[in-house]
Amino acid sequence: MPIIKLYNTLTRKKEKFKPIKSGEVGIYTCGPTVYNYAHLGNLRTYIFEDILKRVLLYNGYKVKHVMNITDVGHLTGDMDMGEDKMELGAKREGKSAQEIADFYTKAFKRDIKHLNILEPDIWCKATEHIKEQIELIKTLEKKGYTYITSDGVYFDTSKFKDYTKLSHLDLETLKEGARVEKNKEKRNPTDFALWKFSPPGVKRQQEWSSPWGVGFPGWHIECSAMSMKYLGDQLDIHCGAVDHINIHHTNEIAQSEAATGKKFFNYWLHGAFLNIAGGKKMAKSADNFLTLENALIKKGINPLVFRFAVLQVHYRKPMEYSKDTIKSAKNALEHLYNQVRLLGNKRGKIIKEYKEKFLEAINDDLNTPKALACSQELLKSKLSHKDKLATILDFDKVFGLDLEKLQEQKLPPEIDRIVKERKKARERKDWEKSDILRAKLQSLGYVVEDSKDGMRVYKI
Ligand code: AMP
Ligand code: ZN
Image 1 (cartoon, protein in one colour):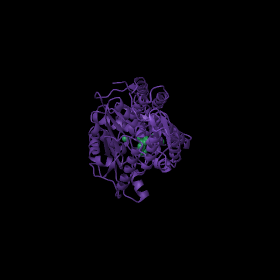
Image 2 (tube, rainbow, N blue to C red):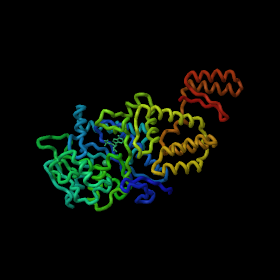
Image 3 (cartoon, rainbow, N blue to C red):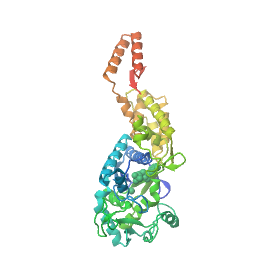
């Protein structure tokens, strides 16, 4: 199998990827907290993860992909303080937490479909895995990693000696970050909740009984419990965006490795943020929040324009978002679509030389900007149309830009009738009639191309 190099946050190095089981890869991607729509920043991360998955598939790996849906336990403060985001969404919209979760889960699935993101093999919801989370906390308790305060069961981070191995920060810096949210009962600022109690006298919408009292799981424990349940001993790659490094993923590693005594995931990949102009992160809690629906679909822009914009930036580089981002990506994608349409619809063979260049780009830590440049080299080369077509359609298994669909454009019957009439006119060399019919097609918004392969008519 070809060599794939991936930048591993654990080692801060580009490493040759080696799966636990030969030819197979287990991937866990932290999914959405379903109390609101996903914004373009979130979607950038899911596109990066989709490219990773497609690159592995393109290289011939069998991939098992698990994604969770966070539908309980994620509080507004990352250090287990503040309001539950699900209950906040429910209050905002006058619905139940369950209704909110169902609504935004559906919206998320629609978004990823629009973006040609391949669905995970397994979707798993935090609320459907309470038993597994309780079991994991019980194991941690038995091993002496937990303590109980008035508001929950906490993980004692001082007992896990490798706590800083993912963040590469010294413990003091991590503690400083964690002190932002004050909780006097915590033994160490970095300690985190495994189980939170329902506040006395309050009946939460989402609560379960547990050996420690009625309440709900902490945010991090769901990802440990569900990744180990569904991937078992195939803990190859775990991803998210960079905001997950210092808290969420650091805590996942601590609690999982403390429970099993074994290494949790081998590779940790993190995507950079989508920022709005000025370097401010796009966030659900801020007013700079753009959805796929508002920024593209409602304006009649193909959502794949956003996918294309994401591919133009390497996943570890911050992406600056402005109106021009979409405008220039739209132009570039339309240009690519036209280039591909011009190739006609006969497929030749995949050209090895270009495939190798393409592989070299994507297998070098998912270098999609370079892979796009490689496609332009191919399209501008002197190769035959049919070989170019076969090769670019092969690349599109990774890009996911629907290039194949360009070949299948179905014309409405009235247009098809004019096309047939023009074909007949050309067969009898009636050039005058042919020109009139061409003008007619153009006036109806169609592009007409005559080449040695015959006539091609399409709408842009
Ligand atoms: P959430 O739904 O808030 O749990 O986040 C879902 C995913 O989006 C996580 O992997 C986050 O790390 C990621 N994320 C959040 N904000 C951004 C952003 N501005 N740019 C890129 N990824 C983000
Ligand atoms: Zn997670």
